[in-house]
Every structure is written in C-alpha cells, then in structure tokens.
Length: 469
Image: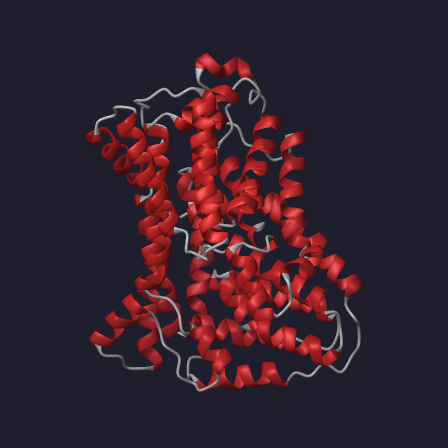
C-alpha cells in the first residue's frame, strides 16, 4: 500500500480526527450493535469518499486508491482459496479425522490442564482454526473439567492457550496467512521465524499448566470416547491418511512456496480419498467449493468435521478486500501518511518500532475487538518504518501475530472473546489470567525487540535512512 501516493495533505490534527472517527465507527458498530466488521468498514469507506470529495479530490483518484489498496490482498485471497480446498481435501482423505483420533489417545487422568493445553494445540495446528477447536474439543474438555471439579477458568485458559498456539503456527490458519501476505513474506518463512518467540512461550505455558494440573484423578473419558467412536464411524481413519502431513512437513523443510505446497497437498489428498471411497466428480467439486458435511449423528464430531471449501473463506476474503480498500483510501487521502510523518521523529530505532508495532496491534484489538484489522491496519501502517531501519519484513509479520492474533480472545467484547465465552460458558475475564500463552507472546516479542535477539535485518537499507540504525 506504500506505492499509493497521497493526493491530499491534511494537517496532523485533521488526520488524527478522521482516524479517530473511523475507529469510533468501526468499534461502536461491532461492540454496541454486534455488527460484523464488513458493514462499518464499508460505511467508513463511504465517509472517506465524501471527505475526499470535500477536499476536492477527483472521484477517479478516490476509486483508484481503493483499487490499489485491494490489489495488495490478491496474494492473501489466493492463499485463502487454496486453504479452503485443502481443508476439504484433508477431510475426505481422512487426514484431519485420523489426526484427531490419534490425538485423543494422549488423554490420561494425569496432568489434566497440561493435556488439555497440548491436545487443543495439536488440534488447532492441524485444523488451523482456534474457534473450531474451542467449540469442539474445548467443549468436551470443559465438560470433563466440570465433572472432575477442577477450576473451569484454568481449564478454559488451557483451551484458549492451546487453540491459539495452533491457530498461530498452522499453515492452514487464515490469520497466519494474512500476516505473511500483508507484508509480503513467504508463509513458511513467517512460521519458522515465529518459532523464536512461540516455542519459548509454549514451553513456559506447558510448565505452568503441569504445575497447576490436579495430578491423578478419575477423569471421565466417556465424552472423548464417544468422539473417537464417531470418528471411526466416518470410515475415514486410515494410516495412509497421514501421508499428506508428511508431505506438508517435507515441503516446509525444503522451503517450497506456500501456494505450491497447498496445491500439492490438495491433489495428493483428493487422490488418497478414492482409496477408501468412490465419489462422483460432481460431489467432489461440491465438497471442494462448499465444504465437507459430516453426518455421523454425533453433534461434536459433525461440528468438528463439517467445514472447509472455498465458500468457507469468503467471509475472510471479503473482509480483507474491504479492509484493504479502507487502507487504500486512508493512504490516498493522506491520513495515515500525515500521522506517520509526525511519528517518524520518534520511530527512529529498532526498539521503538517493535514496541510501537506490538502496542498498536494490541490497541486495535482492544478498541475495535477485531483480529483481522489488528493485523491489516498495523501491518500497513508500519511496513515502511521497518524498511527505513533495515529490518526484514518477517520481523513485522511475527510481531503482528505475537501481539495481534493471540490478544483477541482476551478482549471481552472482541469477536473471539464473545464466541469463546458462549461455547465454554466461562467469561473472558475469568479465563484471561490463565491464558498464559496469549499473555506471554506479546511480552516475548517486545523483549526480543528491546534486546535485538533473533531480529533479522535486510542486507540493503535505503541510503537516505541508513543513519536511523
């Protein structure tokens, strides 16, 4: 979006007022009226169009700003489409059901909180959706915790921590792909770089939950056994269904580009599905577009497996396009450039930029309560600052996830916070102190930014700003 040249030069105070107005419209619409973010973003675009006309900017320039902004999201849109197809193919090939079935084998009466954390982390990693993990495996685990008489807030904290670890590190996650795409970093480069902060946060969290877990208790496993039985009932549990996982790992290790990796996996998974079931081409195409529908009769299993398809990504795709249009207008009308120009006098060091990025992502989550916007707006706003001090874009994408993706479930009025409270019946305020992974991630990314640990610099820095280091 930094190739969009501003055609208007508002004063700093004017730019700040306009930005606050836009944030107020979006946040109030989501928080007060419970709107999906698409509508207030569209309203904000219309308001900015009117502002541009008042400032005597031609409508052609305004329209071009929106188009240029949206064009920056084409890479993300393609990835989301391929992910929708891959999830469907992993379901019909039995890859996701087999992984879930094997994951349940790790449940034991010992260290309940730690097991809940690890199990939801694995589910989130393989599914790529924190909310799906919380709404299925999380519900079963919270029921077990209630029957056992252990702390439900700690159980919910373990579920949220694990689900968002998986969401953050999964190549199937839309937020992971969004963070990589918005700053033009290869998906698997982004995931490998996140490991520097994510792995320590995972280990520390695991140690904490081990120390908090109740030890030996007679934990009722009937809920998980019924899910396992339901998974077996699908006829999708096979050893060869794990082959796509092996291929995925191999592609990551050999640094195959994300789109090619997803395409290879989708084709392989579709081929494997014909080993255990015959599927007419028309039905196959329908599943790839609309998603797989599970009909085992077991609600938790059907909820877990009924997903995927290109159509399932349209909510995210439309949000990305609208958000980037909004960003394009904010840049074209000079609002963000005016604010960044004023702030550039203090954002001259690596430490300040990392801390400012993290705080901005957290702030947008708190003010707006929207996960995607915390990544999109912060990524677009700080991209040029990272270039100025010679920081590699993957540092930005990592900070966006560390302080953007995992913070959303900790905000009571956020999309994730409301959803998780509804499905787990534990309020956000109650589980917040125990969502250790989500709390540790931004702390570690700020710490690494302040110390310079694991920060990667570009080999070439712009001459006019090279002294900023």
